[in-house]
Length: 384
Image: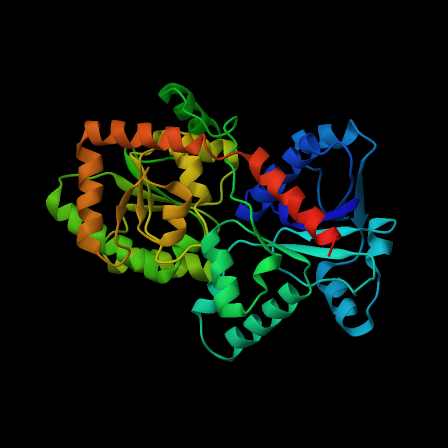
């Protein structure tokens, strides 16, 4: 087969989708000695991550194709003119086109089968005309795919029950964790990484990771819990939030912290590269995931692989991804979250137990297995 993978999600770097695409492709190229790959990028994008550059240079089965088409214009011409063809972009005929995140698909071709990764369905949790239009568009894209990859059975079931997608086209490929990048570090090593490349951090902190976690409702519950914690505990660890936020979301989050009288307790540091994120995980008192909704728990696996205790909402995707390793709390119970924060911060024995459970579980998730199931989905799509 000739498999084209849209790697535009690698840019900008250090996004969840970008990390997924990078890790998956790296493992696919190691796992699959037969098929040929075309990696689709825009001409303005920089170099591939070093590990991928090395892999692509070492084999003739991988070709990097850079298009001068602006992605937004490309999508418009696909819709209006059914041009340019995927064959033109990829250099020759393609059997499989994989989009690591939902997006517009090129004009239909007899030979090519489309594969799309569906990591979450936040669009189902919003209302209004715009949200309904997004749901219709997503359903249209998914119905054109011969195979759809989901990170959890939870998302697979939602796609079936709420979008009406044929279950035979949905394949679950759980996320892996890169234990060469995310692993326990000596404190002095982690501190040096942060001192050299990162922002100034508080001496003791809870870590909150992920752009989706910064949604208003999640922060509201977290700040309510932290306000209660300050009444229970003298000088508790601060809160450090990592993840991309646009200016409007950041402004709203900062305003929420100020309104909760926590402006001196909450630090928003934005997006950080994976190596620096690993240092953050290692230094955190705990990684906290207060999400009321999520599609998976990749950041929980990363935190656990670094030896960080994890406190997480007891939502189905987190339980599916992290099993019994975290300390779970109800997503809408600030008092319960406050008690969990206090317990972990004040109990070394609890930290040791959560760290042990997390490390054991994180190492059961591998990118090799994710790549193996992805390759099986490609083969299923090709035969459809």
